[in-house]
Image 1 (cartoon, rainbow, N blue to C red):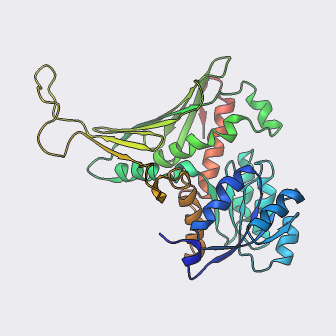
Image 2 (cartoon, helix red, strand yellow):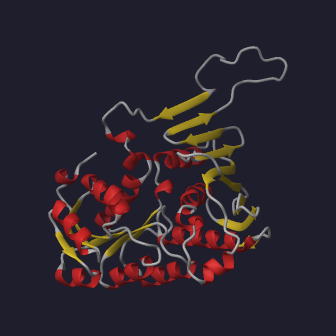
Image 3 (tube, rainbow, N blue to C red):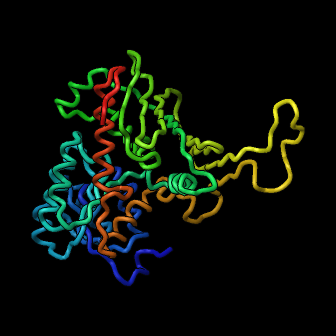
Length: 346
């Protein structure tokens, strides 16, 4: 682990958006990245100037002006409204800058296709933090392991509802909660399960129900819309033929089962350590990095991946966080909105 001041090579960057999310999560994570922040861009002069002063960099109200006056900026981090993302991403790419953009990347899938067409040789990464969580990495590791593997199904439980007027929302380019926060569980499910062939959504008049995903590999995914009190919780469960994984907050459990014969087994703790459940858990009493939200939630991993791609000259295409993965997620998002109880091919 290195901190910003320790990297010998640092990428000169700008940040577009100085709002609450950017201030709480994107700017702080740069303390751990190989970057040098040259400018902050935000049309709110008071907010932009005060933030730029704190980070000892320049402020601009307009991104095009920033590109013109700061030719050394090689990459930008964009965190504003998804309505504004497409134009800002394409402008940055046209200006020859690498781009990291927060989720949701857009309000329509075709806008992501336009970004892919405009990408050229630039690096473009999307902030799909749930796909970059350490817990998601562990799930991918287990699925790829010959000892486990054989993915059968995925369950995600997330606090939200499905709008009834899906077609209207799409035509008017609205940003319902299904877009703003639905991207989170869809990011995890897409990254773990792979390509989705078909989407089916069932929901009642209140919007509670589920989205069913049929993966190309034969596995099934279920995204359950939950209700409940604050603080809202989420969880993910991944099921193999002979194992299952539970992910709740900062706790990951790999259940491997135990030797068992119904009505005959007498010992729930059999000899050896190759059965039972393995538990990984962040230790919040330690003032170290592995239990901080920037790390457990994936902010560090997604932004560090972006920087590594730039420094290594690698353009992510089929990787986690690529524009291609974002396009797949947006297609699932749109399909669920118009499903109304009928399957929609992707």
